[in-house]
Image (tube, rainbow over all chains, first blue to last red):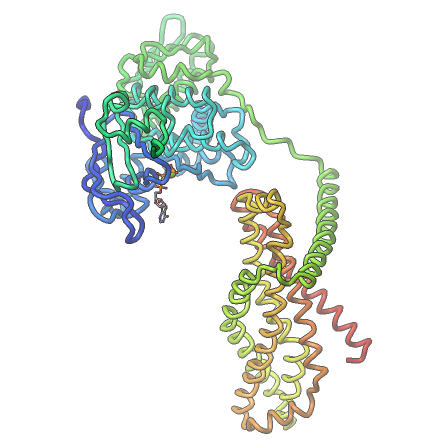
Length: 258
Length: 370
Ligand SMILES: Nc1ncnc2c1ncn2[C@@H]1O[C@H](COP(=O)(O)OP(=O)(O)OP(=O)(O)O)[C@@H](O)[C@H]1O
Ligand SMILES: [Mg+2]
């Protein structure tokens, strides 16, 4: 196996117009996500971050442009190829989207049962390990409705990691988590990214966590319908030419009119 | 690809030399072999040599932990794992993972189960009575303060309950009329009494079948829909949100639905009666009884009392079906399957109640000589 090149992109987004039906939310979006990096999508509430994510995982058809996941276009892929592309990534949705009638362990077991030939005890051990990674091994038998919102979110992360995918998409993983749990989650992400070369695409607002783990960020803006900044979070924070971007990083409200 | 080479040491222990890529697609045969080797070592030390492992993801780590659990952590040792993978392994506590920290509660003894079921039925009955009271109060309030009823909701629900149900009600009642007429006309003809089939259809449709079929369709369509709507709202805490805003969910959600059902069901029943009679007329026509004769025959046998007998029932059925649908929805607990349970139980208990109440009506009408 050849060693991965440091800037060999695993996801290429090319001139994509993202939106719903006829309505475009973001236009002419172009960026690369490199293999093994922690890539963060930033932006105001309602700016289209989840929308962009939904397009990258093939849930919504793009209005224009192409999205290559490890070389294959997820927009046009069909049948077996599409199935193979879907196997390359795990997703945690903003709302968690756990299956309500299954326990947390069963939620994590489901993809393992469907896609591996491991036996029952082995799958049970893996499911428990994934839940232990997010600190939930004492809640394996609980139903999603019986645990807190933050715990549901963590269980959803465990489910996204169940098959050890090469790419993991997380939509606001640390929203609703306390600072300690959120820091533990950062450590987990970093361990997987640095240790296994897993690529993370994370939608997040948590500035401390972004500074701690992000290799690169892009920033989207609803008003300007696209990417307004791209690069290292620290550099953007200190020296972005765009005042809006600097304000975002410094948590400043719109200056009041004199 | 991944391989496993097993060698025996002088003291009866084993060295398991792993090589290659450990992930969910490669570990299956290795895990079995490893398990057998650990068992064969019979208490002697086992060293898992991972020096040649060049990739080891969560599934690979699970296999290492599985082997460690099997032999006990002080007997099975993982050596030479690359630091990146060792960090993944290091985050787990093999002993803690061996235990199920959240086991399912043990089954209760049969006596306790029986008692619980009885208590559940009793609680359900009490809930039904309370709900009936709340609904009556909410309806009384609606009569006193009609300006406060959310009429926009009522009209929207009316459309779904009434207008949208017209095709299916028409289809079922028409078929009912046709079949009823046909099945009775064939034997009646042997006595030359086909004409009296008109009497049968007239009385059966107006007194009984029109109202009952409409109510059953209402239970299947709208009862289930109410339960699913309110169930989803309950699960999403929308009902809690109403309550904390100081808005009574019964007044806010149940009243418009019951009013809509009360307005629409009698009209649907009337419609079903007419279409059913029409179906009968079509069959009779095939048995060469002209339309005019059919109408005159029905006119002679059926009186206004017969019509009212069915029509009055339809109001009661409407309240029953809409009420039970809403109640089951509000009783939903959590999760998608509980919404499904609510809808099922709304239809089942709705139809059971229909049959009971219809029986009560039959007895009362008989005693009153209607
Ligand atoms: N299913 C949908 N159909 C049509 N428009 C939608 C849909 N989902 C979102 N939108 C619109 O797309 C825009 C972006 O929404 P999106 O959910 O991507 O925001 P976001 O950046 O993820 O915000 P947040 O941080 O609050 O989650 C919003 O203006 C929203 O109204
Ligand atoms: Mg979002």
